[in-house]
Length: 256
Image 1 (cartoon, rainbow, N blue to C red):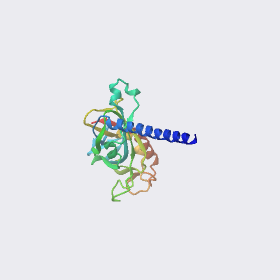
Image 2: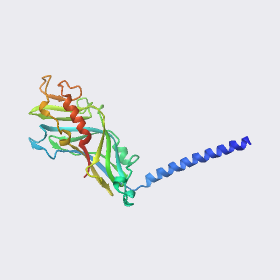
Image 3: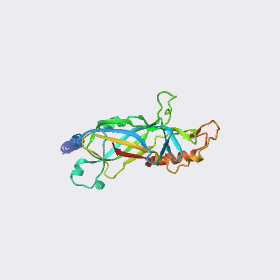
Image 4: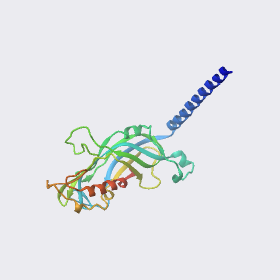
């Protein structure tokens, strides 16, 4: 009797393992068989409500000459094409993530991208690869603090760096944090991926510098430049805090 019970327990255990393996295989097969397209993601900046002078974008009194940011661990979320074709409202669809795709593998790597160069907006590629078809409504990523390479690189030990002028005085803004950022699509339906698609992460400088009082920025240590960074010797912590807070809503996903 005891032997029969043990045999039954072993058989039940083996069947449960087999069921789990079969279930996992079904999930993987579903993910792999979902239609995919070639997707490209780049980053750029915009300043639609700004004026320009001397080849520099001027927003809220800050004249930007250079703007760079580090990105990593990019994950995109989308409403699956099958759900949309089934007539489900996009607001009622549970978003999927494009992890385990060739696009995600490349986008997860740390990158340093140029958003403004010599005073004009620049576009820098981040990643390209296969990703599921559907409507993409959200991109999650982290800032990347560069700790390798040349220490003379302005981005070294920084995750965001902006150089420019306030009232003609050389000014630098930077962050070292690797904070998480969620960029939503500019409209509720997102960016449709149904064939080769290019998308943009747009850093909106009007939103980044919104309600920032640059007239209050000072050169407290008298070295001839205004520094706005963590533990800044110039004491501009309140300005930096506002910019860092604005960053959370200043990045938008758009179709290219």
